[in-house]
Length: 263
Image 1 (cartoon, helix red, strand yellow):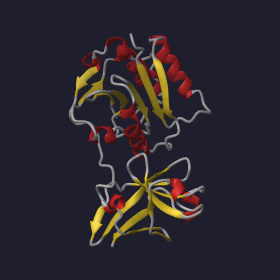
Image 2 (image 1 turned 90 degrees about the vertical axis):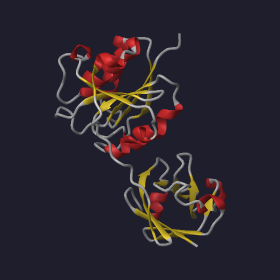
Image 3 (image 1 turned 120 degrees about the vertical axis):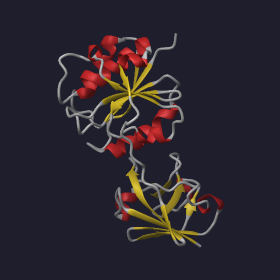
């Protein structure tokens, strides 16, 4: 039988014991689990960054994977822990909107407020639900797959809209959603928002003090040091500088406004 997979996505970093403790709890309950780290480098307390991260990654895992997502600035408050079953995956997370991107991509969706405390590690810390609630719930789920036994079904779960570009005349305004490890600026533009990005139409991209007139198919298609647009593997328009860090080169960070002008 295939070993169950549990993924971990957190803002914990890797210099403390937090991630190791979660893994230890999971393996103590089900030693057969295959644990995969998606990342522990989500920006601290940043629910949007967590939502974008899990929204990009989860779909590449086998069906029945259990994804634990802990970006939880409200830990210990009245915010609910939830268990989510989508059409092919499961998610265990705080009910703070961190799964919003998953919700946007899922047709079949069932959500439970986790209240069955006998699945929790005791005593439950008020500051570390990743270890004491989310990790053990994920592990127990891989042993039974009985989602309804963990709590009560809810429909009022928290979700927010991922920022979308907005048209203004012949210009479309968007933002930088995140900056990746290489300094590429990932915007919220998709080809369906601006078909000219793919069909060779004339576009001018403005971000900060930078003006970009070229959208290329690969990073190597631009001369070194030249800023360009590219449709990245995420499916979003990225602003990049070949062999350099675009964020530093252009002086642009997450949240910066980006305008695509047509013609």
